[in-house]
Amino acid sequence: MFKIITTVLVGGALLGKAVLNATTPEKMEARKNKAIGRAADTLKDHAVTCHCGGLAIPTEQRGKIRRCVRCNKQFASGGYNLGDTRTLNERKNYVPNNEKLDMQQYEDAVKSLKQEDKKSNAKK
Image 1 (cartoon, rainbow, N blue to C red):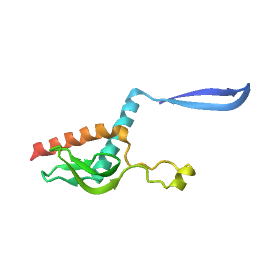
Image 2 (image 1 turned 180 degrees about the vertical axis):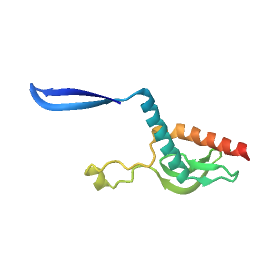
Image 3 (image 1 turned 90 degrees about the vertical axis):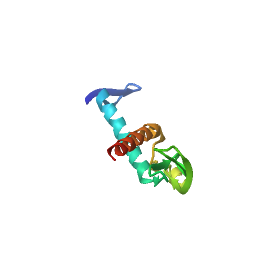
């Protein structure tokens, strides 16, 4: 990682030095893969077993609908909330977001889980 130190001037007054972290493409890819892994783990933690034996994962941040990664069947099961669970008061007081699942990585996490399921079926 490269650190670029710049002097911050506002209205001619010196405010201090800002450090910008320039990351390499490899580190950015590693961060993305780590985020996808966390999303896949969260989906596994909130999954149920489908009638075919596959993993049925949540289809959205809140709800009851799950979809199997093996047979692609969709069905209703117990409710889940993977989204923001802060109270209104916490939101007003700027408490950081506590989402369990970032939906930006959802599709990549599903692909990862499907590949994992195919590998585990191939071994059997």
